[in-house]
Length: 576
Image 1 (cartoon, rainbow, N blue to C red):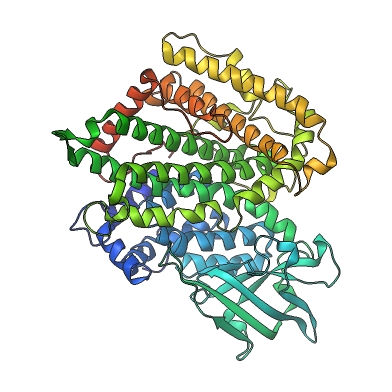
Image 2: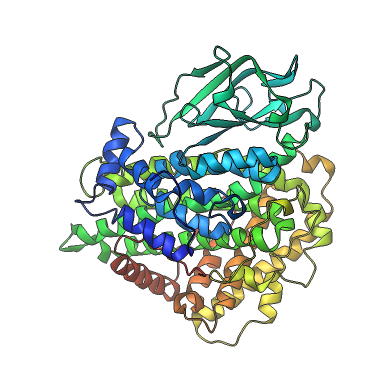
């Protein structure tokens, strides 16, 4: 099948996909981890997995419903893609996410015909690549040398783009190019290049790049020489390419790193299976107090990252005018947390973390594959640079306010309005309500008892005070401390602020889970553990969890591993 099946409710679609892909840990599953590893050893995309996703019609998940696809809720898309990443991150990025990145630019700024063409390509199982990078400039998009300048019959493309996923396999490419020779942000545009319309001899593919992680992803380059292109190939108005990218990044920085939680989900399952099956000193490794402590902390950190990513993804629907802040924070915090969790797990695995045979063999691939979460099409450092100059305005306009964010932000299974790409903005203009939700939530905190409840309140009050202190510090920052050359102390302010955002997301998700059927989210232990770890002083290792927080997390982790049946450790309720 090359066309998408009819649109159905996400839980049903997710079950359909999970059923098609099967239990990743089953040795007799032709789409399981064993087959994924064999493709990785060859440095190839997992062909059988791609075929299964083709038959499912995954490309339709990236196309808005108005264009005949299934994309109406971004949290639904994350769930679908997390299922793919749990099995093979190369499939997640190489078959799916790369086309999604290109598509977001088209849905944000493309004309009707461009969007219809791209939608048809994706719905029929074909690909659209996106070409941002030039090796000489990295994330410095303003330094782009690739040009699309006026020619006899429109535009002439000249230059090369590198580090492009699926550039040779894609039927079309979204290209970021300089369309005017003058300096400034209005000198760049994005173009939709239908490769079937490119005249022979004007386009050349560059050799594929080999990588240590994501080995199967087809990463290459492309070069154009005096390639004619009609003027209507520009997405939106000429000169708006950087603005389009900045709006699109809000979607992709948030959702793509959220998809990577599926990778760590599988790695945690492998590690728990390993320690339960390995015997040391007459008992299993899982009986060792230190290993239980590390695994409970890793599970806590994964829960924290997932919670923050979920809140930020829902914010794209509910408060899109604030997501210029959230997107930077999610990419900065979640990617770092996921990589740190993988390092924690590798220490538990010991020598088994790099062994390419046996039950633990997939771990070494996942450890390599997680690295792009930290850079991808935008690096973590770039997110800090973007956040820093916004802090003084946030301090003056938002941080001392008393109004919190909408309650629906913190209810994972609640309904959402369809996502509207037209509501994305470039600047939050100093408006952000997630951080102030913490003080409002503390004031409305339900009565409770016990050490976990007491710890949660104390940690919540700490982060509420932290925001007040930061408001005073950031309000007086000098212009020199808001630039790329700012001091390390100024950059530390961005880290402190992001921690407040994460603390607010976890605290409020716990508070709004009260009275629901989700007994684990309603238990203060997981949220207290999250905030306990977040309070780690900058530059130091997070502390171990006290027993009254560690034991509930350890018990929950073991229970989820026993019940998962290959379906992952982070199930989330989704509205039909």
